[in-house]
Amino acid sequence: MAGHRFIASTLGAFALTTLVGCTDTAGSVEATAALATSEAELTSVAQAAAGRKHFQEALPGTNGRSCATCHVFADDTALTPAHVEALWARNPADPLFNRIDADDPAAAVPTYEHLKKGLVRVVLPLPANMDVIDVQGNVITAPDRKVSVWRAVPSIADTGFSGPFQFDGRETDLVTQAQSAVTSHSEGGTVAPAVLQRIAAFERSVFSSPRARFVSELMERGWPLSAIPDPDALLLLDASERRGRDVYNLACEACHGDRTRNRIENRATHDALFYALKPDGNIQYTVTPGAPPEPVRVPRPHSEFLNAGYAYMTYLGQRGVVPLFNTSVDFPQYRFRFYTDGTRQHAVTDLPPIPVTASGDPDDINPALDEHGAPIVGPALAAQWYSTDPGRALISGDPAEFEAFDVPSLRGIARTAPYFHDNSHATLAETVDTYSRFILPGIPTVGALPVHPPEFPGGPPESLSPAQKRDLLRFLQRL
Image (tube, rainbow, N blue to C red; front, side, top):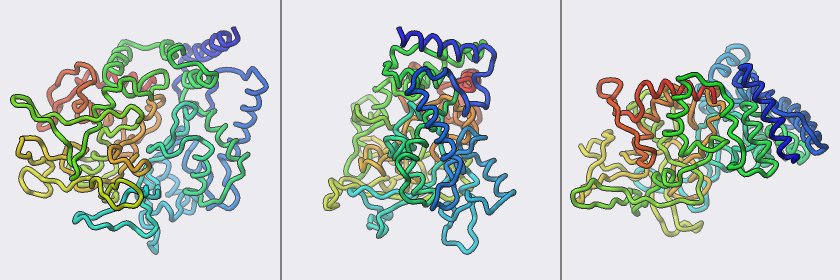
């Protein structure tokens, strides 16, 4: 009975907020859905309040940055380019502008163009079974066996149900995540466990909406997601938003599903994006007479990461093929060799594979065909000379997870621009365009989506019509 009373009171709390039209406003950092009803909950609230103070203040022995330096409260605890630009104009001496995130940390006069795109430098150790190689296949791994990538700063909202953490899932809990952030971005030492616990408690108290908090509270009480009432059912939607919800269920739910909006609901959709690789790094194809070549797919039942092409999009931007929000700054150009184990004696594959193009022009993005008529392509399904970010593979050492990233929750997404792991898309509308043009067409298991004509001359066919995209945007803005 106590659990049912909690549901009723909590559901009522955010239902009232929804009905008066305040659910999806900018006060999400402060959103609460129910009063604490036990001593344990009161303790958690007190811990979160203390953690907020730690979150806002630079800890002793750091470079002056606090958690809130990069997770800005006024921007839903993300780091927006607009905030960085304004802060640079107002106070270039702010702790945000530390050399560790300069375009070139060794420059006599550091510049911060990457940071102005909302990007921070993330330095990670190579897995023991990987090396960095050049285009000739020579090993060029740095002596410290570390590589760096440029990534966006995600909001801390909804961390109560969105783990593992970071775009590559390298942090499995919020306590170790907080310590890693202090070490890597604030250049501090070991933090007292009690302080880390308080910071983690605060992070768990931040939600994108009362509906998100409702889901998290019930999950913490042990409720299976299948038993949690759908909090979005209480949203008062107009006709366009209702149509947008239908588009979401058709085109997005497979990977951004369940009450959390970040669960992979359709394993066939997930597995459709993982391919068997040949030793040269190219995909294995099955060729049947009279039918187009079909890539050999490998089920990944224990993986929650996806290579949906985000890193390849940035590669295309760097090559000048597509205009992206982040194309004005340079990204690293990596190739990797994967080995059977940490001895690095027996190579498994090199990624990305050296392109074999249709025209022979190294800048051609169209692949050549092999003797069986199958395209000669790596995991990106296209010609690719280098990777700007290997994603999850840099944590797991698994070539199958090359350029794969965590599936984010879409709750509160309208307030966290730019988008993707490296801020390649400035607006939510651009993101929906990319899904319609480049992501959904490559996922054969996502519904029976028709093919719509290009929206502009020479453009790609689309999985969603202009009207569907407009409606989907309306729904996402309410989610």
